[in-house]
Length: 113
Image 1 (cartoon, rainbow, N blue to C red):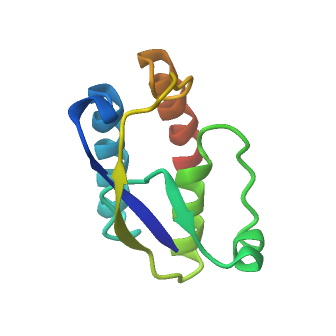
Image 2: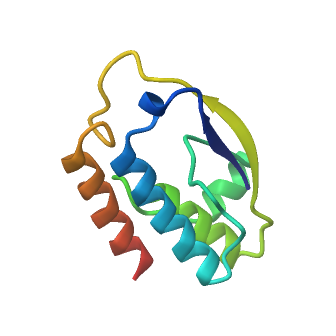
């Protein structure tokens, strides 16, 4: 599984609350030995059939974490590549607000159980 690790072009590209939440989740993954992940990232790449075989179930904001956890459990190598991350043109309803970030963290906490 290849993850795109964000390299923010400006501080405005990635809100502080979203960066903090991402750091906490990445720490959780590393602590549990699920890969040397620093960023769940905006991009992922893997063979389609293999992804389908992981049997991901989350349909909200927990699926990025579920994918990394399932891939690691299946014995996949998880690697990161840097991707340029620019400020959004519009507003993000997920991590562009503190409320959206809280919803995302709660969804991911449910997946982590």
